[in-house]
Amino acid sequence: MAEPDVVVIGAGVVGVSAAIAARARGLSVLLVDRDGPAAGASAGNAGAFAFSDILPLASPRILRKAPGWMVDPLGPLTVPPGYALRIAPWMFHFWRACSPARVRRSTVAQAALMDLSRAELDPFLARTGTAPMLRREGNLEVYEGEAQFKASLAGWRAKQEHGIGFEHLDAAGMAAVQPGLAPRFSHGTFTPGWYSIADPKLYTLALADHFRAAGGAIERAEVTALRPVEDGVEVAGPGRTIRTAQVVVAAGAFSHRIARTIGEAVPLETERGYNTTLPADAFDLRTQLTFGGHGFVVTRLSTGIRVGGAVELGGLDRPPNFRRSAAMLTKAQAFLPGLKPGGGVQWMGFRPSLPDSLPVIGRARATPRVIYAFGHGHLGLTQSTGTARLVADLLAGAPPAIDIGAFSAQRFS
Ligand SMILES: Cc1cc2nc3c(=O)[nH]c(=O)nc-3n(C[C@H](O)[C@H](O)[C@H](O)COP(=O)(O)OP(=O)(O)OC[C@H]3O[C@@H](n4cnc5c(N)ncnc54)[C@H](O)[C@@H]3O)c2cc1C
Image (cartoon, rainbow, N blue to C red; front, side, top):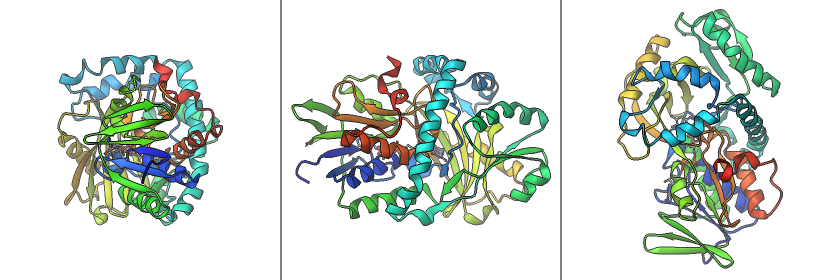
């Protein structure tokens, strides 16, 4: 491709979806990724379109829960001792985002992006030929005892205000949705509007195939710097520079390194997550299960039963600690006594996370020709279709489908 209209950096689910949306507006698009499509977090996530997850993680609720979680080094939330100082500035922004007023603002912005993403999902799947991969099986969040259930109710009320449908269930109601739960789970909440994809890696690869078939180009190349020039941007990497009119930075948890080269400081960190994918017959799973008090989920994929979650604020460079995957699997065995734990494959991925739990979607400070689309944290698959729509609007110079002020890269400065 001589000089593409757009270079999209990063072929995870966000970058590929944005590239497809840009191509659909008639632009010539080159998608570059140092490792090829679906190499990052988009490959191994839990596969949920968690449209009901509108409440930001940064909240007074988490401030209350976090100290208890951090006591267990293999529990739902950890900061490795060697990383505590490095993450302190991010933690400071996180703490500031926990004020009730900021939580309300973030919730409104998150709900708007969720609504857009949900509205875009069916047409996007239909256009890309991936509709058969969608499963509308809902999510069952389970609670151990009355006190834990009651503590969840304020959050459910807030979701109700944003039109999210759910049903609270007793033990018998839960057994009808999902047989085989341990009796310690006395209450649950079923969210029917929560969907899953058959397999997130296969989905992203299918999107990449669709993009190629629609005339898009994909190249394997590392990007080390952006350089705004007259009438365009140079995208530089080892041994090669590509000139283009517009750039989309969708490099997941590595995006801040690219933004830094055009003078933008974005407090992007990674929430490292872990899982184990068991053979498909490991458990007769009927819906996604969320063990919120333990920070993990169990998901039925076409490729197996995936057990995982947790957050490790440990940066991009240290090796994975797969004892975390094993710890969640041990808990899952206790919570689902019929679960067969053998034959699993462990995985760790980098969630790209901003301190206020909102992504960055919008133009760079240095030049309107660079558009950011990263930092979706726990929700990158869920918000990929809405983000793609917004990126395409920006590339085309059209008004974005929703107000994107809350997603600005400059909101922390
Ligand atoms: C355990 C776990 C469970 C999760 N479950 C869910 C879920 O159920 N639902 C949900 O919505 N989200 C979930 N997430 C979050 C979701 O996976 C991420 O938000 C999403 O995958 C981010 O997509 P992305 O395209 O931005 O990044 P990635 O998928 O990480 O893609 C970024 C790409 O950029 C490339 N890249 C990076 N730097 C460069 C460079 N310099 N040059 C060229 N290429 C570069 C990488 O190779 C990579 O392919 C989960 C995450 C984890 C870890």
